[in-house]
Length: 458
Image 1 (cartoon, rainbow, N blue to C red):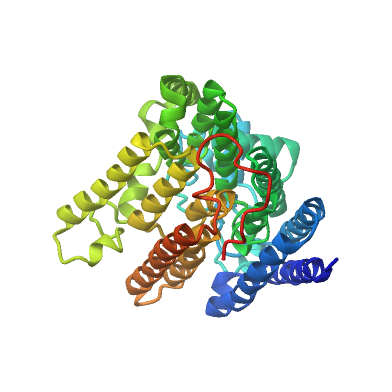
Image 2: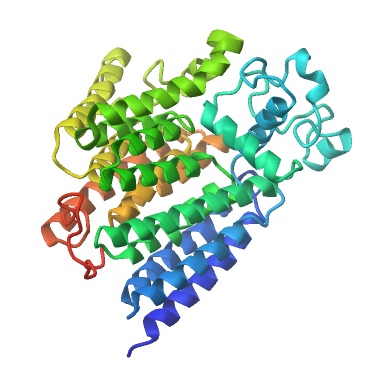
């Protein structure tokens, strides 16, 4: 029996864990472009390790090793004293702090005088704390302190839960919470793949990738919870539990709004029962807040859309290459997304494939600055045995850095990154379909298609 695949898997995982720890000790603002050197090496290690996992003779052995390595990487990512690329987790803690104090989080922005008594470290550091992070006295670790929260009710409930279960205001509580959720994604993915008669080791494409480790464990982004709920909804739908799937989709939407697009992908299997259940969750989630603060529940969403240049079409980087007026660019981008929604509703393809197409179109057309939005697509790609769907998230990291570091050619960088991601997704999908090298064309319905391993999709 050949043992080299197992040795390669363990070795690559050990290197990945070391790189995860190294990345956690640095920040994008501090290291600037050097921040990507260990990440580039980690990507190579990921590809080698995930491929080796598929070569291990015993599936159970491969799965156990992958899960252990995934946990080690995520614990290493939670070793930093500050998040490496984003300070969103401070806002999570602030929203929970305010809400647990008896104030609706949608009522006031952090800078409001009504919240003066709530301004405690680490959200509003002491003068010495501000000095330690290189800021003037009176600083805050919160982004957009003048804006009301944008996070939906299920996210707010999650913030409260993490704060109650892990008292204190330490960065690590959010990192460990993100790591725990991400491990649940991996476990659910492996179980679901086995139930579909697919190779559960396909979960290695997600488990060993640096992108979810950095985004969900290292920076605690709540999008990992949305991904977990989406995977759970796909599994529920596969088992014919339409109402349950709808409830899970509604919860995912109430974590981050963009998972609502999954309803279109699940429409043919769930019909109105799914739609009504998802809608009911959203109504019940927002109703108590609407009763207290009214229209303020929309929070900073309108301002966010303006800030991200969706109002003037500048955010549609790839569509905006065309020499067209802004209204036409916006209309064309909207039509592309709408066309994908119509296709997803009408297609007989399994919901997971429909969701992958919808997320791919949405990410590549809207070209967001934030790379963590695309990690959801990466997770669904791993579920389908299509690791190339990790490309938008990987390349969006570079675009995000160009924006955060205020590079003068950030728009050009964004167009190149998303353009390359589009080329990778299209070309790899075409090649895979012709060669039968991915699980995407093998899953013809909601039933198993065979217990043997699918060919390694590279």
